[in-house]
Image (cartoon, rainbow, N blue to C red):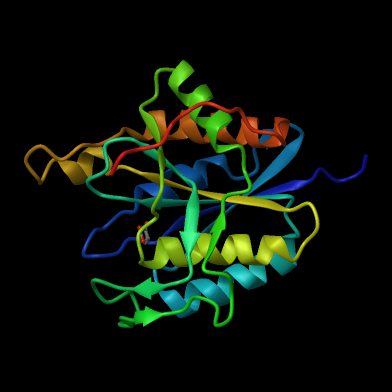
Length: 217
Ligand code: PCA
């Protein structure tokens, strides 16, 4: 039997004083699973600009995935945020895990200002909402390491014919949110279910649905 095409699914190490990152807690569970005729390979990326860039490039070369999905924690967000766009800037509000704090630097010098996700974001949103999972299209992945990695995934994918990429931010886990009054959270079981659903859609669909999911602000 010929080898199945691969999905590279990444999570991040804890950052900002947290002791877990719910992205990696969910992503790691899906390692080795078969979804839509693809094999999932889960990897953790350091929450550090330079190191994540190096490691991601190596993973893309080593694994030659057909689909790449990055997952990161976005504390304070109340829904699964399917990112539409990644921008070519690093503007770190705090130091990354290696002490770097780039301000207004390019992710890729002379790269395009932005890349749009090449996964079917509206179809993914529709499928999540149909399963009663809180989800939204997000028009910013921030300007920290997640946006950096999302941009690089799309930049590297653009050079490889047929390779598609995207990024999802997830809320705090309940164990993180309990420390802050009114902070939204999502349990690991729901995050796992959501990731399986979006990967299923990503493998099945090359076109996207067309319905409004924009925002006014
Ligand atoms: N979230 C951070 C970086 C790592 C993570 O999980 C971000 O949103 O940039």
